[in-house]
Length: 193
Image (cartoon, rainbow, N blue to C red; front, top):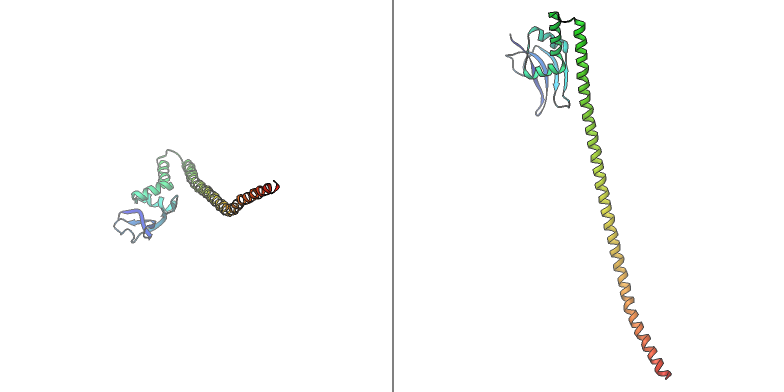
């Protein structure tokens, strides 16, 4: 019976997550499986992978063949690295303590890369939010300035409408007053003569 390590699809349409399973290669994709060894959720950023390293290593050593996607996931989590190191121990290249030390070093470097990516994504999101808030504040300030300018123009127009009516009436009265004053002066001069 050929055994495969592969993904079994779950979840709703366009929002799938996967179980990492060990199954007979002749079984349907989402059908019967021998053992579930983990899960994979590509909907998060970075993708969430939960994997039982010991079980997956055990099945690989028994001869289970991973599919391409499952191989990429196993490589990402370090299962293939650990298998490679254990084969080196079997050949006598180094001892088991050295293999464990190398695996721990590799694992720490990998975790540092993942954490750096998470931090970078968080910083990008924070800077994007900050930029949007700054742009919104700028737009709000421009709108408030435009509204204040329009309000002052309307107030000036209203004041100008009130003032010219008064000044027009006053201006019309002033020449009439001047004319009547001039006539009075002329009549007074005639009487004085």
